[in-house]
Length: 423
Image 1 (cartoon, rainbow, N blue to C red):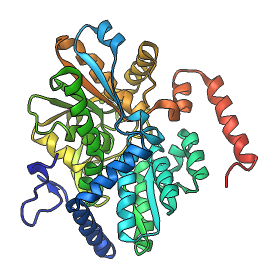
Image 2 (image 1 turned 90 degrees about the vertical axis):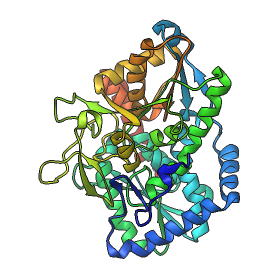
Image 3 (image 1 turned 180 degrees about the vertical axis):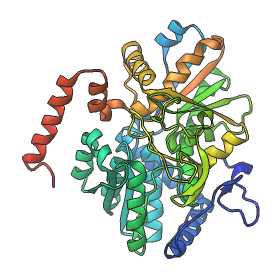
């Protein structure tokens, strides 16, 4: 995982080609430097990674399994389809890998409070879980629109002891939650660590989050070799900010025979403006926002454009700088899946395999299931199932036209809140 991609040229630390960097206000400079130094020290200390692995093994169910989809592999008639089951990680997604690692780092730095942004809510739940385990105060910023879509996750964050702040600015989604978290950090940096949830933001966040999420790729590489005796032909992952993709891709970056495919949110179609595809079909433009340089969905004046996805976790305006660089040099390929394709893939995987992917993960299934028949039965592919779909129950029920269940569940959550279930 730590190949030349992470060996920065002199004076270019935090840059991957033209992307990355640390574009921050002066008030955050010392805090970022402190974080960079603490992260470098942790990397150089072998006991830190050992402690991290022990924690993930005893607390978070690692290693997560690699599951062969026997029914779909037989039905499609092409490659053997394997799924890396991050949905079985503690809190139901890959997010715990990053937050538990950053929690250990927070403890090393002597901070007493953590803050985070969240879109789909899984990062918020994971951060609240980590804070409860490690004894930190915790505040989660979440766009008001995402709160409406992810009520179960909001409920659990609050029960875990976190304060959830609804962000009403802008599009009221992940972009705006990140802005609110950065404002908080600027005012509380002496006692607070910002647990960035994805591979975006100023250096060292893209590298640091990839470091912790690389445990996915390390495990998946060993597991597929044990299962098949050879490397997979292709590895698929959905791409919002890009943490789950960066994590699994890290295990195969040095294997040129393994194609790495990211799948973005195609929304209502790339021919419309209702999508969140930055790299697919070159829809994004290079720019600087929220502390780093990457491809953003923006107009000619550099103003960020509205985004859309059926998934609350994939409608972010930018993409991690490491993935932007890997796409630019041709090491990864990026496709897009529409909302309709995602729902079809979700139903197919549920009915054929008894597995319920998160809407984010279902994007990766779309492209993987489309391309698997193009390969031979002697080959294999790996799909990273970044999370489980129970968090999406309101959105899925509405999208599938089952308003009865949607309204019933929303009424239940409202009743819990009115009866004082909130702390």
